[in-house]
Each structure stands twice: as structure tokens, then as C-alpha cells.
Length: 163
Figure 1 (cartoon, rainbow, N blue to C red):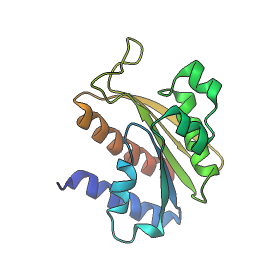
Figure 2 (figure 1 turned 45 degrees about the vertical axis):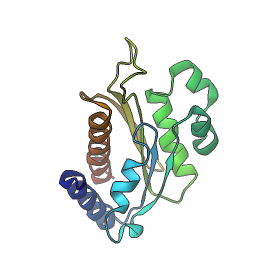
Figure 3 (figure 1 turned 90 degrees about the vertical axis):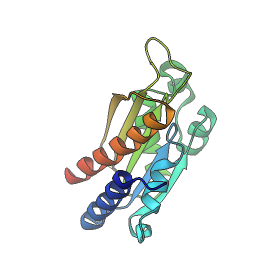
């Protein structure tokens, strides 16, 4: 199934990364590699997409991205602190210039009063700075995940423009 919005966004992001002479990596939890898939659907993406980390479990976040166990225990996987560590960890374990990290609750279960289904934290980082934002997306699991991919790439573009 073709998704024209995601295809267009990946092409725009790739052009921006090329223009800025940057490469990217992705650290994904709830999106399950969807960002990497969308980016690598673009022909020539190897010029600006280095690779990605799908770290769905807490164990993989710790092992692959150096997310601290105490951070996961205290704040939970869906938190500002964890996505910042994911974004920095992705850079530490790659030669990419910028990273995007996503962790959220796509549903249908798993939500709580403080973190309802649709809660998604994202972070963007380069070697000097990192920023994180929380979003709430409505819809079913697929819709939440798709919106997360869109926002992650839109904001990655904005992050790179400011670089």
C-alpha cells in the first residue's frame, strides 16, 4: 500500500539532509522500524540514511542504545528522559550526524491515566544538542504509529534547518 504523504516526507527529508550534508539514524520503539522503512524506500537514501535501531523492549534499549536501567525504572520507557538517551545512544553507536528517537503507547492496551494510549515521546539530537517533545495522537494502533512517523520526520527536518 502506497502512502503518498510518507513518501513525500521521506523525499523532502532526504533532500534536506543531502543539502545540509548530514546523515541520520533512527532509534525506534513503538514505530517498529517504520521510520527506517520510509526513509529507505527512497532511491539513493544510502547517501543520507546510515541505519536504525529497533529497540522495542527495555532490554534492547539498554543493550543497543545505552539507555540506563534506572532511567527506565524511574521514568518508564515512554518518557522524555528515555527518548533523549535513545537519541544520544543512536549517535554514539553510529557515525550519523543526527538522530531521531521514538517511544510511545500505540495501543490498543498499555495506557494509563498518566500515559494514555496515543502518548508518544520523540527526541532529535546531533553531537551538540538534543530536544524532546511529547505528543498525543488519536486513532487506532496503525494511526498512532503513522502520525508518529510523520511528526518525527517533520520535526527532524526542522531540527536540521536550525543546525
